[in-house]
Image (tube, rainbow, N blue to C red; front, side, top):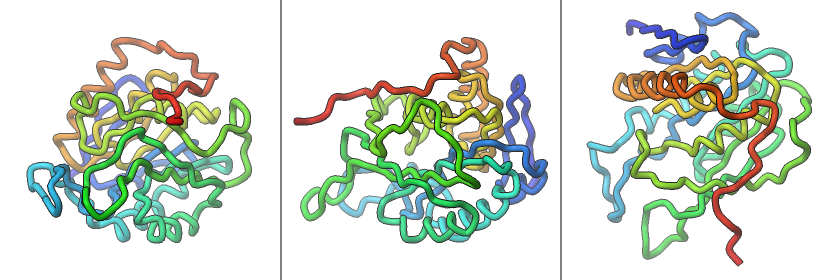
Length: 249
């Protein structure tokens, strides 16, 4: 497919298949990968049991294994010796994701993102799923900024009616992950609505993003342009520590 390239300040976005885009980038040019790839669960919004709505179903979500494997193979050489990866994953697919990532990264932690609410699903025979995994991989042992935090990250999804993508992640959470490291160039090969790019704008980091879906690519470009207009409002040297809801006693 044709690859569209858009520059927004020092940030570069590509519309295309990341498996075609990533090999065109310079080796060792990336410091941090933060990405939310297809989960391989044929995601669709909707609360009714076994309800799959074509209007909200995510394209390629069922292609986790070949897609993620090819993407990781292509992105790994782009990371420098101190490169790190944060990869979101559905808990029920960790057995698929882990072997793919372990081929190229040392897995330092599997972080738990406690969302503060439950996802839709079978309301009668299963437990409500309140968390997602964030796999922290690295090329070598690197120090984290801000000391040794715990591996449960409590960030509410907030008002999801304002979200531009069905699986959009909280901006504060993405900003926190990037802020734990000194790397200047952040890559997201599955940008969705562009939250990682917005976080980079706010933290003063350079962003490289890839998205295959034109609708979400256009949304991401607009969000990053809007963030550039606001300017950098946050201290890029301090990781985010505040959470958005209190522990339940």
